[in-house]
Length: 254
Length: 254
Image (cartoon, rainbow over all chains, first blue to last red; front, side, top):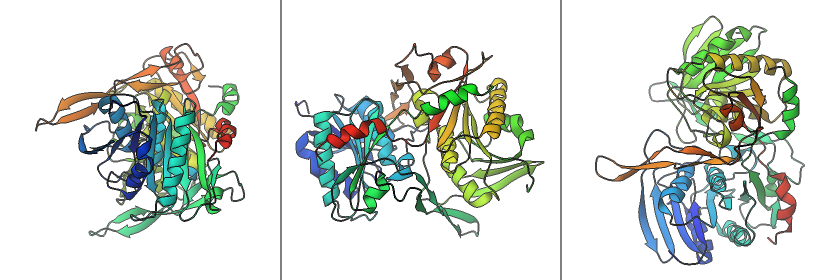
């Protein structure tokens, strides 16, 4: 892989065996040299988590034509860090994370391992895109999502992305009306747990829930786009400072 | 705990047995009714991670005067979600997360479980503050950090925080010069892995590294404040949308 072709790093949070990542590789493999560096099993909901106490392991699982596949014991962010620090011979020109089985729109940007990996690519200065299909099933149809992924990959390779910013793309299930640039919908998950009993009769809590949308009518929001059949692209920035609040805080007596 | 006193929810990412969380409880316990809901062991670097596949367990570990301590098998964000959804009889008036053993300044806001918990409190509309001491050791001196924590707790109980915003406070080791309101320092971690061999002779990678500061001279940055002996408070917002980039992306042919 010492070609002049763009180097595209691909990861996900569903693990290397997921249909979504295979669809993504298929959709973009003619655009460059591909290195897949993905978790060895599902890591949904891992956000920006990193492995700090245990050691990480990774190995080359297979290599075909211009696609190398590494499997890693860590989180999505570990995959990005380890790939760029220790396994790649040059900095990637593009990072693609996904295609996730399930939506990462709205507030899920905070919990998503798929988005966590794209944010980490951004930390390294690599133009990075998180991609998710709003359909959870293992055998979901990724055709339309893969086509959106390819369009975004081509445009990001052409235009780059500004420092400190990446993209969070979500694609509804089924036919799509087009692609809309949107903003993170305000809202939160509600009814988040089901209480059950384990084998010993002790309470356990299983995560579940549904997203409560606080801006149903905002047609610039990502949830609106998805509900109306559009793929959504939210630009995400890694500087989380609430600059607007600084003047007020400076008035506090501290 | 059906008193009229403020309800203060306390969590951390170092686990319920850490000195930092005990120091925090001690510093604020006269300000309200305290519920500690903390991980059963260290969860450093867990960011906004949630537990989606395994069930969560939690139990009341002890109760003294106005302090109830629950232990939970999940991440810091799980603790916040589970406490508010399933264990508290009213919405907290304040969430405090920490005091972390080690800095969460700069880009660490993306990886920190301490900050992840404060962000989750903010998702619930609870005024939330993450607190960290720039000293890793188990037996660190938390006196000054606890005093900063108390000051912030008092001010946040008085003034609240705007919707969608929380605070990330870091305190240097030793005496402090005062408290500065700052912004997230731009930079990244470098030299992130040490390669070693496991018992079978296979490569493993241990996380390590140091923070590379890209704005050494910016005296409005959190790393500058800490390097100069000040405690730092960064307002953090949970809407990660890069609004400035939207007009440019709308020009892309997608």
